[in-house]
Length: 235
Image: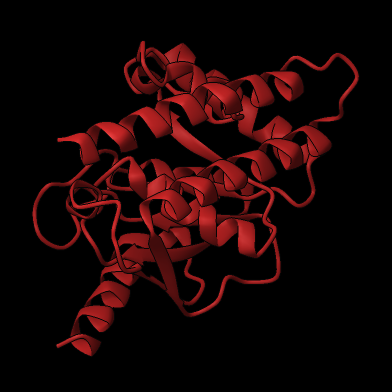
């Protein structure tokens, strides 16, 4: 019980500290969009690395992120902790980027401000005008930030089952509209279960796999080929 309480208190207090750090950049009157996203990317990475260090979780990466930017990373999704794991990897490669997140996350009373001020871009799937503004925002960002990357969960929501759920159409549309390469990523562990047992006395290793670049035209097909190859290699 005290073990669980301690990790929640740590993450909440650290989150509050970083919201203040995010806001300094988010509300800065003279900062450029490129520098702003880079500063927020660095801060999200720092936050995530401190959380993983406290939980004694190590992230093992199989494959490499591409050196180029203007990439959409398509990642399977089972927990909010997936973001923390991926931020650890993006920080290693010093990637400048941000997350696409549903509007309901921004409206959440507990962590909504964290998503907003850390530079995530919201999308309201139920609002046509909101969708139009979303695509305009993406276009603007890529026109002003030449080393930008986007991170998205193409399943659209957390999947509680085994494997990977079918994709929604948003990731492919975003990649097509902005001429982005897509890199598939698979997080092997169910991070909700990993988090329940943390912090660990000995380092707990989470495995993440990165595949080759794929096209928006065959995103789901090629992702599942990549996923099946990872699954086969672990049997």
